[in-house]
Length: 286
Ligand SMILES: Cc1cc2nc3c(=O)[nH]c(=O)nc-3n(C[C@H](O)[C@H](O)[C@H](O)COP(=O)(O)OP(=O)(O)OC[C@H]3O[C@@H](n4cnc5c(N)ncnc54)[C@H](O)[C@@H]3O)c2cc1C
Image (cartoon, rainbow, N blue to C red):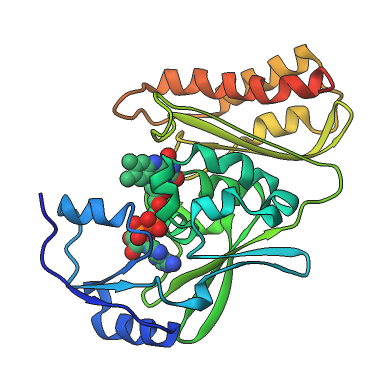
């Protein structure tokens, strides 16, 4: 299918984009990398009368260190994050997760702001944002506000974004001393959306993890904290038996939603596989 007819605007400044959003309301759609939106237009899942192309707005670009936060502009592509030395140094979880997003051609165009705003339950960036306790920076004609990732993702493809607002950046706390992080996921083929994924961040001393944040993707409508498993591993020297207990607790605590290819039981099983996979190196001191 082909997309329906629409008008097209390419503002150079945020103020122009806000004015267009105010004028067109629900009839306007923001365009970033187009890697999700263009497919939705072609399938006629969305029929806006105006596309507002954000790609010329410099205020949405760049990766910068601002005090104790790494600010990643909304237009930063998945590839730019994957290859950024600043990200590798200060938010290595993102470096680990990026190669799991789609294929190179899509990573070259797709943006972190688009991914966060789209809020696909199987997407990597929302999951990493929650694991890292990141803030989503939202801009509008009346200024900027910051929303904790835990509050931003509200339901299936639903976020806290209000009419007239644009995701302008994601702010990630810089890596704490002894921060340990891991990312793993299982997909049918490389480049497919994951069946289940797991992002993990903690403070590591030898084989003990504290302040653990384990976040699953592909299991519910939004990224899901695995609180029961977090509590079981918190501050304890990890042994194979302790890991098995955490895996059981994780599986007992989730109610996965089946998708087109995988049942709820498959997802429950795979979530446990991923937890064991990322914790085992900590047990063995690797
Ligand atoms: C074959 C294929 C496989 C994929 N696999 C994966 C995968 O494994 N993991 C994954 O995470 N993603 C995957 N994607 C999606 C890809 O990562 C997209 O880049 C991402 O979902 C959206 O980013 P975008 O910049 O392309 O946004 P667009 O497609 O331009 O926009 C997506 C939505 O976000 C809105 N939007 C965009 N930018 C902003 C902003 N700054 N503020 C407010 N709203 C905004 C748009 O209006 C639209 O509703 C895949 C896509 C394809 C085509």
